[in-house]
Image 1 (cartoon, each protein chain N blue to C red):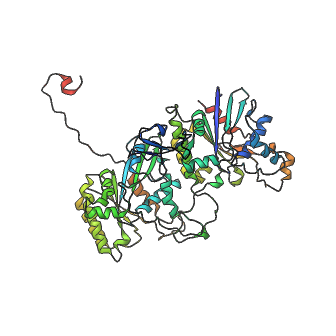
Image 2: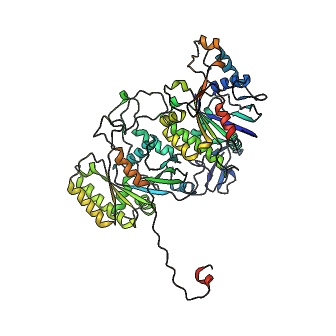
Image 3: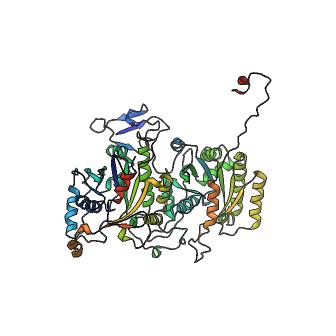
Length: 322
Length: 278
């Protein structure tokens, strides 16, 4: 069966019909194209409703049908290690490590997306391990979203989405909030439930340290303006690169003056302190601490208007019930 | 004890040993060597015919041709006349792989998923394992540290995708509010593993992602993991094993129960599913 959907929020024929029509040929939005013989073919196969790849904004209705997922905004400049961190999260889950105490892996609708990242970080015959390639800048309105479902011992599911976005979006956004190229960064800033902000120790101690530091400061100010009390973590990535105390203090001070509170984590996924007796060559505990924070509950505080004492005698009119 | 009728769907990808397991199980069902026996005539035993002959000669059966895909339905019963149908939809195993690659589920598969009330999934542990990565090896280590070649590294993710797809299509069927169908996992070619672990431990070591997925989505009472060695030993396709041929295939093969105990009854996983069905 071939055809094209007129619904801009539907990705048929890559996935099932977005409005849930079991037989997509009967969907009112589908324009059927006859096959080469001029016959319409009866659908004898059903598409999976998800592609397995990194999710887009059109896929959110599918993931969010059960309950609103917790979105973790992973923010930082290009090559700061954002995608590598997400790959490390998946690798640990694949090894059966407990990345979120009391919870186990319960599924994912973007397994191909996770595997695509992780494939760069796995040992392959004849090849050295490489870091995932740079996440390319695209004209997408929103970031790629990696889905993860966790379950506790009582089989209560919790869904998570991790943003995988190119650093250039945040560079644009930090200097020009309304830049057309920053639409994806704005989506993350508006919709994420918590944020992991990357500070690249290698870049901050490299030859362009001054520019990198300036860019990060602009990004901190931009993010702080839209944070609205949502949890924030400052992630010192590539922490195997020594960073002078003054630079660190300056960034901490700016952040302290800009947001109510934040957590700090130092991570590195490069072999620098290989302990022969250890199962891992990197500090997995540090990674796990960050993942635990990312997966912790983000309950947004809402204010409820206080009930004012009523002068009416009628309980129903005053309180809505007896 | 089980009552009523079960319909058990057997699912397994290419080269997990379905045809050999089928041939050895068939021989036992026909000779009533275990708790189950054949009750009536199977719909189509042609794909197993060649395998039965090869095993009698002490040879490993050839791979089932891709073109062989007609369904085989085996009516089985226990000593108390509780009955079930074991459905072999895809001897070669390519249909399952094709479904995952094309992300299309054929209508006949969807109907099977809807109609069967128990699933039997075969996995070959020697094809599934966690590969070393940047967390366990330094970035500069290369091929010299790697010995497990010619294997599918993302296999456990594929298996999770397969199961969550089946679960999804089962849930959108009419039974969506009911509990999931009971599931038995057969870890095949058990003789390829050299350990005394329980099947659960083997699954946890070889496929932790899948192990967690099952724990999160299944109640303990509706899930059981078995080890099965259909032949007890490795056979060759060209060089006959005289001892195997002389003693007879029916005297080879065993199952490892979830608690680690060994039994010669290859139908143990089927019996579990008959006992747990709605």
